[in-house]
Length: 264
Image (cartoon, rainbow, N blue to C red):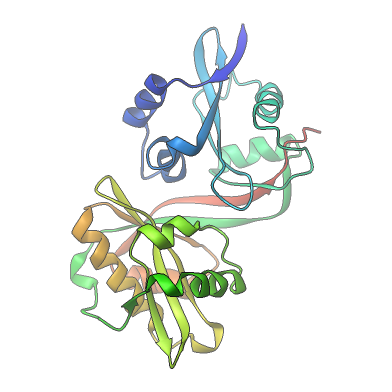
């Protein structure tokens, strides 16, 4: 017997305790820091949870996280149909998520993927001795938040919310009156810290700005939590090298995808 329903707070707590955070950082963040703005759509087979498709409404696009518990029992088209009904997202809307290889194949087999998937690395800071003693970047003032948001958008950065700039430390490096590099946090609390929105203007790259910026952000994060993460596209070899040189190690290799809720 197959049924669908929104997860209870008790089930969310159970999943939080069971999940491997390093391998499923996105879904873990939905279960914890983002849970107030998430709808957790669960598919149950004989009253056993088979999979969850979680919808987060806090970004500029429909953002999802997928967590599969029992692929052999999952009836994926039913889960997609129920999620579409619950969220009221149109079939032609472009959604986004991050998937492991197994789940990527599942989405592809049902014709959901649009565009070109991009390989994505979750990295965790492991070696404090490799961080720079830097103070090159300064805290972004509240009056500069709109300017920083425009700076990020112009760099095609879309995985951020205004609240992340308003409530978490955000650092920037200026040349004169204009920002040339910025960075902040997706999450900043004792549970875990995740760096994000690290961007350097193309004509200022190769000068070590990102390395100094990331060092300062990591030091800030380490004051708050022993678990400090960041994500980066695997093809961005220069950034991966910078992060590795600062003591970060790859925890998971996944794929960023755009997809629709239209089953072929």
